[in-house]
Amino acid sequence: MSGLAAPALDDALMAPLPQFAGDELAAMLREHFGISGSFARISGERDLNLHVACADGQDFVFKVCGNSESVEELAFQNAALTHLARTDPALPVPRVVAARDGSTIVAHESGGQRYLLRVLTYLPGEPVLGSKLSRVQRVEIGMLAARLDRALADFEHPAANRAFIWDLVHVTSLREKIAFLDTDQRKATAARVLDRFTTTVGPLLPALPRQVVHNDLNQANLLLRPQDGSVSGIIDFGDMIETIRVAEVAIASAHLLYREADPMSAMAQVVKGYARLLPLEANEIAVLPVLVQARLATRELIVSWRRQANPAATTSYRDDVSRFGWEALARCDAVSLSETAERLAEAARLGGH
Image (cartoon, rainbow, N blue to C red):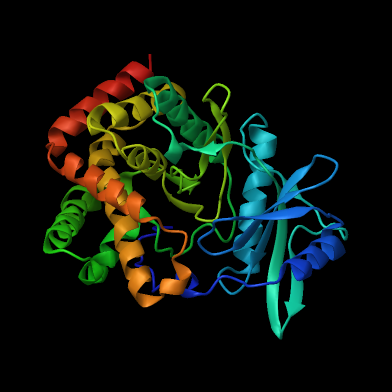
């Protein structure tokens, strides 16, 4: 299974989010899951997500999916969460909640269209984006990324090996989207990153370990406890995929570079935490600097494309986050790949001892 075929245009990102009145949502949730409570909207790229607060103190996430994902893809997510609950039950990830009929995915017809409904447990906490992280927190996030990968190492599912626009293996397929960037400087930066991927990462791809990964440990999907700043939740498994294992730590590192003046130190701390629990191979360390840049570029290429092609579907994308991303990419671009790789290799050695 090579997993190297380029993906087709991801129509799921262009589909509008489901729209329902509050009373209809309440009726759907009560009918299928026997749950009642007050709703608060949670941002989502492809699903309508709602925090449900019940009178008895329980909290849930009600997820309504339209045309953006198949039953098989949602079953993949549920199966992974169930697997994690068994292999590392202390990991702070959501649990799958069964419907009244025992199923975990419910088909619901409304207005002549089918919707797929799910309920997960709700994890409290504040998104990482709103915090200035310490060295200890970055190391902790690296360790959590390793725990996820270790727990998913033997997990397999028929829907795992899919063509997906957020898969870093396929980042060069985004080259046509460079035209959607708003300045020549940003276009040149993105092109340079894709060229680096082709020359540096491309030849090593067949040798890199592969497995199912979360694939989106970004600053919105990691939650912190306000009391002590420790990680209280890892959420949103919608981008999960079988890909190169090192993508996990690359993505986590990339998103922790926002507003960081010293990207090498921030990356090194995440890598050190990861390597404490899961050793990185030499080839994985060699490609990490470019993968971090590739993730930062991927996010901005997809956001720029979606904003112009379908503005109504991009309300969850924040302008300040894009600014942070470009600033982080510029700081990474200013340091040589060899110097960054050496620093990360040292961090991995320290983490492994």
